[in-house]
Length: 193
Image 1 (spheres, one colour):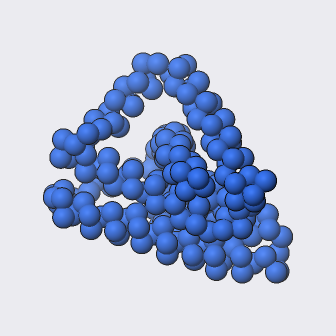
Image 2 (cartoon, helix red, strand yellow; image 1 turned 60 degrees about the vertical axis):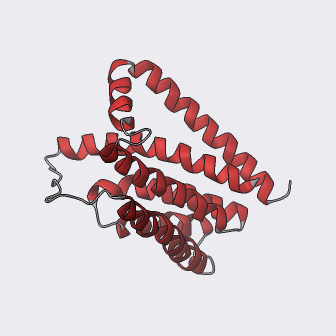
Image 3 (cartoon, rainbow, N blue to C red; image 1 turned 180 degrees about the vertical axis):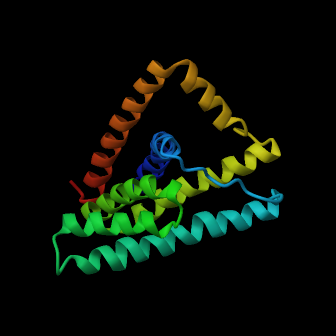
């Protein structure tokens, strides 16, 4: 059951990441930052999709979580407070992405994943949340370029938000509340309460 709750948290985290990254991108663009556009053509074949799932979703979920939540965060527990270890590992997680656009929302995701890892005393829900978040991103990128199901997701979402911003704000609030409810449920399941 904790697996399914972690999957749902990963899905909601993905949607909230879109909002956070949009706000942060607006701020840095307002300060004069211009993101570079990719050059050349990308390979959107089915083989490339599976390679991307492995390299962008599976490996980072395991490697980054073991590094940041396993080694770094838990390694600091003996020398500094748990709260400070969580904050430092989350900032390092964001900075590790080496992309100004990702730093802010990756740090926030790091806080969420770290919190789940600390309270649940397990790194596995963190790995699942991380994988789901990255997998959705890979899938939607390939879906958009290959005409797969949900290929127009980003455009549809953007159109919806710009024309129904009050309803979109309400959905964001509901998503945050759902995330909190799922976190409570996951914590209770992991702690066997």
